[in-house]
Length: 293
Image (cartoon, rainbow, N blue to C red):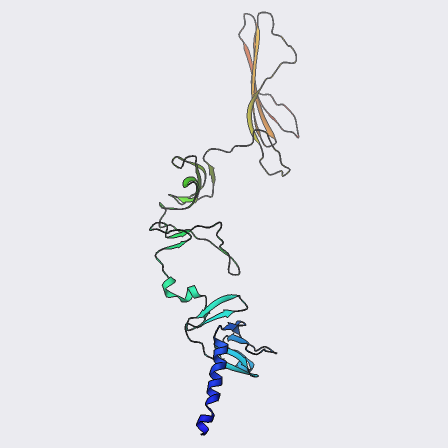
């Protein structure tokens, strides 16, 4: 009978659909224009507003079969390999997305452990050699938020599960860096005032014991304090029955040196006379200016 003679057409079409949909691979997602020379079985996930022979098939799957394009409307739950992006996608009823994004059970998880066990405090726990957080095409920002000014949002560095350094907003809105030698006693090394931006070193600034000058003129590369021994050029010994005592100190900041000294000459049976002199020496102009008496 004629109706029976046509059953092979429906059966063959079904087989072709199975060939295309089982282990479905899409050459790309969001395609708008058909390729000039498609190959047998080539399939595309169409975007909005496709052109040419794809026109009017927004969001459908276009399959090149027997010299013509066949179109299928995807159903929520279908999976396909995106050959262009090299990733497995699932259709969520509106678009092709990554499987995790399509699974409602993976949203708002109470705990998540990756190679580690999460708990009520550490709700996300990751044990790995490294963690990569990358941009999605432009900028990237990692946000660490706290509830109020008196709370803490910081990054803690540990050694053997014992704290050694912490930076962030610790108990205030000022940015601070703290260190600890034992994980119990903490010392603040640096604070940046949130209101003024002023840099507030808690323990002062320390420079190398041996100065290491740099070529940049605007770089403070040295600070030093110390003492020196002044002397008198006109006389090397004290008068008979008298004495001479001398002392000096200096402060060096970058290329500038501030000197001060005190020389006391005690003459026989007279009141000692003391000469004090603060001075400043610059490598560009080595002049000793003496004031006071």
